[in-house]
Every structure is written in C-alpha cells, then in structure tokens.
Length: 246
Image 1 (cartoon, rainbow, N blue to C red):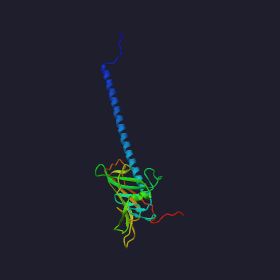
Image 2 (cartoon, rainbow, N blue to C red):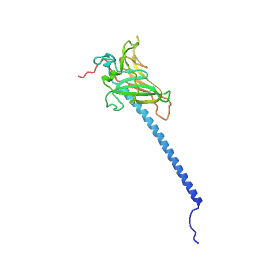
Image 3 (cartoon, rainbow, N blue to C red):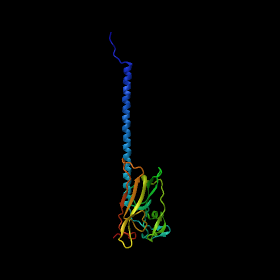
Image 4 (tube, rainbow, N blue to C red):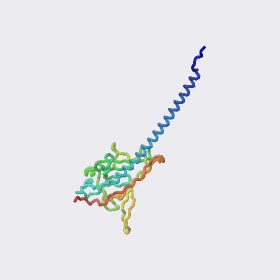
C-alpha cells in the first residue's frame, strides 16, 4: 500500500505562526526606520530654518540703506535734508534695506519693521519682520511727528508702532528673549570719543553696528539654536550729505 505525503494540522499552525511573527518583525523594523527618518528630517528642516532665518537677518541689517525723510507728520523737509529713516529701540527697529525676503539682493529697497511680540506658548517671544516697498511717500506715512531728545537736545522722528498682518514673516520663534542694541559713538566732555553698545539710539545718524541678541526658550543640544547676530553698518557719511554724479 503506497503512503501519501502531506502535512499535519499542527505543522500548518506552526508555519502560519512563524510567518506571522516574521511579518510582524518586518513591520516593526519598517516603523522604527520611518520614525527615525521623520525625526531626522524634522531636525534637518528645523536647522535649515534657523540657519536661513539668521542669514536673512544678517543680510537685511548689512543692506541698510541711507534714507532721509522728506516729510514727517505735518513737517515737510525739502530735498533730502530731513531726519534719517531709522528707528532704533530695544524691541523695535525700522530701516530701509536693499535686501528683501522675496527677491533677495535683486529687488527694490524695502522698508523693514523688525519687532518682538509675545509667543503662543506663554512666556516666550518671537521676532517678526514686515516688508513694505520703499518710496518717499510710504516712508513718510509711518512717521507721526518729531520728538525732542532730552539727552542730545536734537529732534528725531516718532514712528507708528508696527503691527502683525498676514504678510508678516516670523524670523525666530520660541525665544526666551530677543532684544536689539546699537553700537554708537558717545561723546563725553573732556574725554576721547568712545563707542558703546546702547539699547536705544535716537539721534540724527546711523550706528556703527547693530546687534540682535536671541536665546531659545527650551535649549536643545541636538538642534541649531538661535544665536546673537551682529552686523556692521557700512555707512560713512552724514544724513545731510547728498550723493552727486559727476
């Protein structure tokens, strides 16, 4: 009598169990790999965003353009002999730059409003920038009038506070603090002229350099952290001196 080959029910159950365990192990390995890839990609994107934002901030400050106001509130200044369009405060900075977010160095000059606002997590702050195409008309619209500086005895423009909009761009977020300071020349009677970092620089000229100090709310050694940006100001003339073509 010929014996027929086959498998028993127990052998089938063992084979199905082993195949299920092998499939489950492959799925867990794929899940761990995809999770690691997503975390790595998220960290890379965060690092690129931080590095890109700091590069943009540095180039915007280094592109500072010497512009004077033709009008400020009810005051009119014939020609270009008015006050400089530069607001230098601890939490707000307004200037004209040849660098823009959309067109980099190739576009028209932009009026930049850099300011600090509270964050969404509570206790943190974020750095915002607004861009407006520069023209003598748009430059004068943000000026509310002239204010007397008690320290220097001169007059400087007072600007409207900046506001966020759908076109505002977040340069840095989740910061413990963000503040501006300015390297300016200080004249002390009987002493040589020195340069000092000050939290505000009202007056009739431009600073020697601008510094933006930042620190993350929750430092993470595995990620690039927002750092202090210091940009020199490449201007070597007074606001009342005009360029001439010869």
